[in-house]
Image (cartoon, rainbow, N blue to C red; front, top):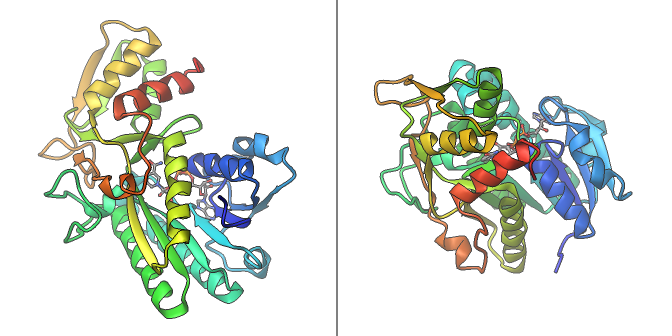
Amino acid sequence: MTHYENVVVTGGAGFLGSHLVDKLIFRGCNVTVIDNLSSGKIDNLRVSLTSGRLRVVIQDLKNVNDEWMAEFKNKDVVFHFAANPEVRVSVTDPQIHFEENLRVTFNVLEAMRKCDVPLIVFASTSTVYGDAKKIPTPEDYHPLEPISVYGAVKLACEVLIQTYSKLYGIRGLILRYANIIGARSTHGVIVDFIRKLRHNPKELEILGDGTQRKSYLHVSDAVDATLHALDVFVEGSLPCDVYNIGSEDWISVREIADIIVEEIGLENVKYVYKPMTADGRGWPGDVKFMLLDISKIKGTGWKPRLNSRDAVRKTVRELLGKE
Ligand code: NAD
């Protein structure tokens, strides 16, 4: 059952946002996307645009103005997915993450407060846990000690949302996603390896020592989990809630490289490891081992269809145009 009809998706022209828009349109919602197209593309929305129920507003949410604020009037839910998701950038240029993630989230919350939007769904991340000592990591793990500025500002956004929910009654659903992969993705290890192997099919540079092990979730599962969690949240009465969204297993960077090499049809590719820290991380701020405990969302009746390995293979095939 759909409990909401008129929604805003910030960052809706991006990878995860556009898949979410497709599903919301399929469910019969009227969707307004606000996106500055810094990494998103209108082409990602081409199917949904034919529905007549999608409006796309090209605006930068860093700059407050009446034009985009007016788009928040008479909306039931804001899915706040606009961000700069590049963890690596946050190490070399922390200002970008302060502006694109924290300032933008503050602007979005203010627009919601002024326009009386009752509910925000926020795309948070596993990186808020930092180097967690407990794996799989549950939602109530503490202390939360992110090791990248990206993780730090996402955590700050979560706290802002919790405070807005207490002070102004805006309900907040915070979703901490594992690595989300699939068609239309433009960043991350799979995109990086495919690009490098196209350039040089004999050799692959692997950032880190290759033993980094993380959990991956296909975008189709991520979108299903998002709307499932929202349905559960809307039915309940909590002002704010947090769910981990991921798969139940993990895969090493080396295994990902093997799948990509196999799917492209290459042989005898030389792997050249480039550890960027003394303990073999891909870059300073890279969490080396990440697996989320997803018991909480599983307890509400959702579970992933694909494990990490199958999600990686499907994504590689999608990005190579095989599916
Ligand atoms: P993406 O870069 O494809 O999407 C982000 C979108 O936001 C883009 O369309 C971009 O143009 C837009 N945007 C950025 N800054 C903006 C601004 N100032 N004003 C308006 N629009 C702006 O990234 P994604 O991977 O689809 O990530 C979507 C969300 O999910 C982000 O919040 C990200 O932090 C979060 N997330 C993603 C993953 C993942 O693995 N992809 C994991 C955890 C959390």
